[in-house]
Length: 203
Image (cartoon, rainbow, N blue to C red; front, side, top):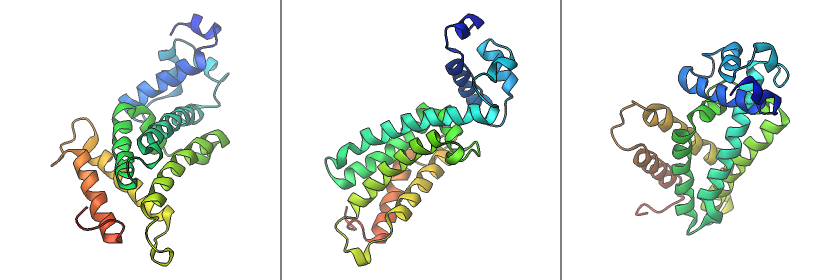
C-alpha cells in the first residue's frame, strides 16, 4: 500500500492488514506501531489519524476477527441442523478452522491481552460469537430436566477452553499432535458431554 492509498481512504484497512501480518510473524506484542506504519507505506504520525495507539489498532484487528468468527460459527451451527449434536460438533471444528485460516485475527482476539470490553463495538461482536456457542449448547441440553441441567454458560465456556487448548497445543503450524487436532477436540468434547450425561455413552 503506497501513500497514495491513504488519500483514497484506504489507510485504516491497510494498517489493519499490516498489523495482522506482523501479528502472524511476531505475535501481538512483538511489533511496534512504527513497523505497522512502515509496512503500510506511511509515517507513524499518520497512524494517529485512525488509531489512538498500537492497542487500539490490535483491537480493530480483533473486532474484524470476531465478525468473521461469528459468521463461521453461525454457518457451522446452521440452526441446529441436522441435529443438535452434529451442529454442536460442527461449531467445534469451525473453531479450529478459523484459527488456522485467520491466525492474525485469532491471536489479536485471544492472545493480545486486549479485553473484548475495550470498546462497545468489540464487545458487541464478541458477544455475538458467545451467543452462537450458547445457543448450540442450550439446544444440546434441551432434553435434560431443568433440575439436572448444568449452566449453559459454564458448559459453553468449558468447550471454548478445550477448543483453545487444542489450537494452542496441536493446531499451530509445526506443532506435532498425537492425533489430528479435529479428532482430539471431538473425542474430548465427547468424553466431557458423556460425563455430564448430555449424550448417551454409545453416541
